[in-house]
Length: 423
Ligand SMILES: Cc1cc2nc3c(=O)[nH]c(=O)nc-3n(C[C@H](O)[C@H](O)[C@H](O)COP(=O)(O)OP(=O)(O)OC[C@H]3O[C@@H](n4cnc5c(N)ncnc54)[C@H](O)[C@@H]3O)c2cc1C
Image (cartoon, rainbow, N blue to C red; front, top):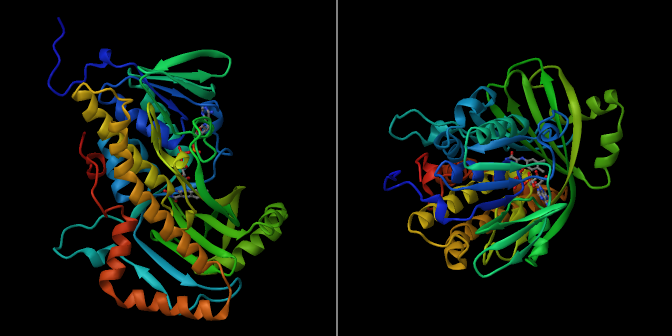
């Protein structure tokens, strides 16, 4: 007879957990659960050779220090580290295209948090989404408790008392104990379950591209607030930076269609000359921006995570980090629940996850919404006030350090994975 140790979960008592959506959040959750021997089926609509192709997703994600600890705890960091550019400091300033930034700048340097002389973690790392997708796919292939169905689309669910039938297009349904919607902002599963959302469209789009520059960036990220919205310069491995250029919804399509030379000219006017000559390399992508919050994250046998639960403006580079915090909390609730032999679809158990995550997600959504409104206007009094605000925060060390701790993901009660510990 096979013996199980105290911490091993008797998976045979549990029907599988189905995760709808094999994006960054869904795949990370699958790994966290399968590492603790819970059986997971990931259903992803788009084939992986498409989602990992360089032209599929040009984004580079800022990953907070606590997200790095989670990747370490899941054994993913060794594969990600060669692609990760540490963020050593962040410069925030106000400006206009073609002009020097305002002298009122805010400089976040994590060395300021170093009270006891210990080595300081960087503020975060920047990693290309395609490298994260590749590492996640490879990790799932090593875990026998994960089954992947891709391409396959979840079309809805049929709730039963003891299980949920997950409907898959052109395939038989899967009986599961719990289904998790990690199917992104448009979440077909959230809609099928009738969970409503609140939110609004910012009438802005983010143009994303990569540039090469003559001089090294030394790990400095620069957030420049221009009249049409933030223009972020995010350091990548090598003399490269990722650009997240926010434009009004009507102008963004025009910039997207500009011939290469004109696009390079417009980009350089905004980028400035601090790192020498700058040249866009590779494709351009455009993402419409809005805020969307689900009114609830759980129903019996259903939980929402990642963008399916909350999609926010990328101004602070926190959307995926929030998704990873959902992963850490939900994984801990389910793994501990399984150890106690609980029904993983029990709404009382799932509510523990909702209570843990909702306030943090709503707080960050509200903070980013405030920043977007404050920094996406060219009204002279507002510009003056925000310049003074930047100057003031720069002078008040505790306030500045609090902002830095948020950027590093180190505020609030943390699930174990975010401390780099196994569940
Ligand atoms: C311009 C921009 C820059 C950003 N920068 C940052 C940053 O620096 N740092 C950060 O933390 N966050 C950032 N974000 C946010 C981050 O990209 C998202 O929060 C994150 O990608 C959400 O991941 P997800 O897995 O929840 O959703 P998604 O990436 O949308 O994945 C959902 C998956 O579900 C699949 N799917 C959909 N419907 C179905 C179905 N019916 N059946 C099966 N599968 C389905 C989709 O194919 C997809 O693979 C940025 C966002 C934008 C727009």
